[in-house]
Image (tube, rainbow, N blue to C red; front, top):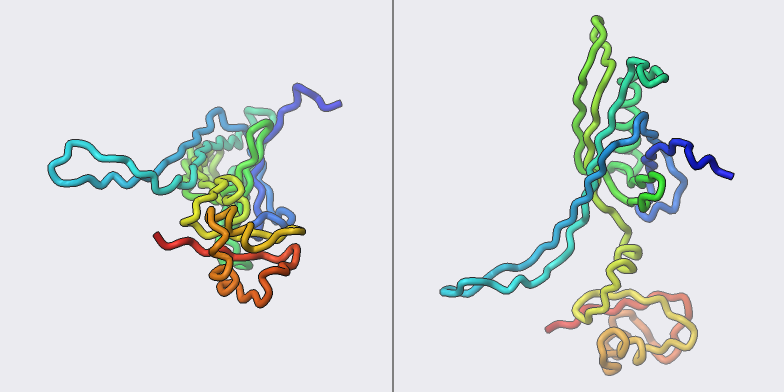
Length: 222
């Protein structure tokens, strides 16, 4: 049985694959858990309005990726019962969250802590403030303030958004007994678009779809 009183540290896991299908290539464990986590979200609207009007209709455009801000306190004085190398801990954070020459970009990250929902993200910004030094200049205390922004692969993002509008692009995996007219009816509300979809996908026989293959449904022009 797990110890209910055990301190669970916040972890940042680094991945090289955008769908997080690989094993973590790096891990950063917080020395002291942050005492505050800030989550922020932003919706984008088109607020254009006609001349002579006093208000505007806020037409929804998109939900921007959300941000999460964390502050990590690193204490190398030993006051908390464990003496650590502050600079080494900072370099560990930079390695896990920073640029990877193998993939030519920063790592894809997961932030994990207790019952907090696992957040798939990338590092947006970070600042380091050194608070105390030894006479020799070695840092004894530091604060890392980091902001992470949401990151999801296309399949995950579409599953979360559940976009079903016919003016958006769709990709469907063919199931047993699926046929193109019924799939068009599900997406466009009209089975008559099956010929256009067949041409886009290069399908010679739209009546015999192979289960497990992907079919691309382009957006409808309004």
